[in-house]
Length: 239
Image (cartoon, rainbow, N blue to C red):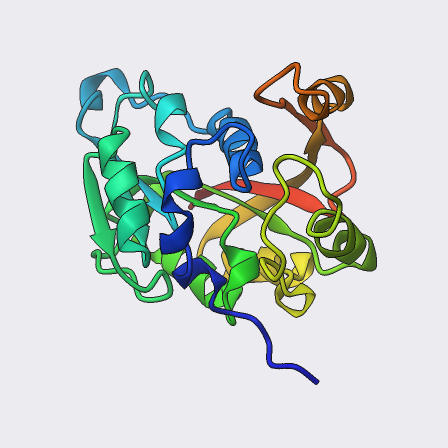
């Protein structure tokens, strides 16, 4: 059996120039970032500009445009130096190179913590989630999106997405289905660390997707679904 692929998130440096390409291999991450931002609450008026948001595995900063009016000082953590430079150039206030399973921040130091499209790339996503809960203050919001450990997700995210010759196709080897995330364990881990999560599915808007493939649209809206069997988002508040 081949080794589990758990290092892709350290390999983004060669793709740094593609972060903001609307038809490149990282384009779908921008679509998901916009959907994730819908769950980021506006900072309280008395803390506008001082509230802190941590984006775990921030990549090239695709989240930034959707946070501009939310009132947060935005921190990004990633292992890719080139990606962090992109994030800083696109509006992140602070960027830090660090292991996302060992965050270099104190407990209860952020009002919002997000982890987008990274849990399915690490050997222990539940340790990353526990760290996210640790640095989240009581009453703060946790948002994560990832891929479920189902056969349907394996077909959709690996067999089809990585092999069909279409715009927005991720590089082959991006995903290892053995790292896909168990939803029940994710919920239990968050609960054990004071966060009660709810899950909802995400999928591309069909008409947008067809127009994107035809070269008539550069972005695709994500639609919420009841099924969490492929791509799903988790959101909750810390007790």
